[in-house]
Image (cartoon, rainbow over all chains, first blue to last red; front, side):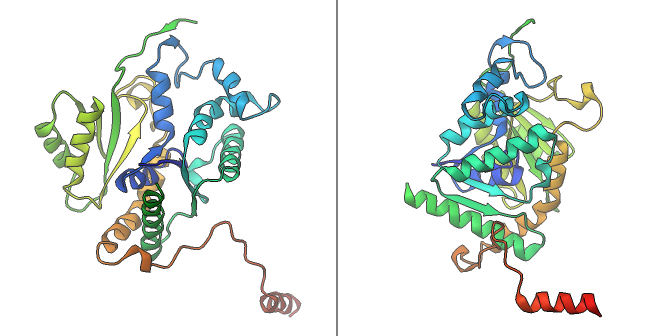
Length: 148
Length: 152
């Protein structure tokens, strides 16, 4: 079982595909769950405390906005832990404020820097592309199992 | 700042989404209640939210998936069902994150078709998708055609 980072990290399709083909998806839900199940200071809604931008300094410089560093405290440890990654490049759902946009760029950059197996895709736009999409993911995840 | 005492510590929450002509969320919820032991199951318009101990949640999800494996999709969720910080009953309007789910639910029929098709064909024989990082150079003949079109 390989830890596969998925981008968009909230993707239902990727999360399901990775688990369906026998691997562990690293998604934002697990990072959020870890925070909301840990006692500390009340900081709704996501329990992102003032400590998180400090932790984010590991992946982003101090002059980078706190919003990016706070987000990186969620995604950074997952990027470090991942052994493979699947990226969907035309994910409009990952659109957001500048904090989200810059964090998304940094996530993709950090994954490209890592020497791990990586699959880059676009969302399917019709049934034929759906077959190619699922086949590409299945092939990628099956080969990961073989490599392990 | 006040101290934060978490609830549902050690629990796991999963979404079970249904995009099927044969199964409704109500059917899944009924089956889920029948086989569940000590987990919380919430029926929603798109499927179920199941929360409880990890082993038990995984067992129920695996059983539910067997009903229509190509049309049932599962995803982790950070918050337990009905959490005041996320539940739209408290916040009003669409739940944060719903837009992402709505977008992907419009693509899921293609994915379901892909899963069904791959039962009969080997994935190694399927041609790869276009590489999204590849930016093909503009073909010289196409450029000439564009220039001609501009001039006429």
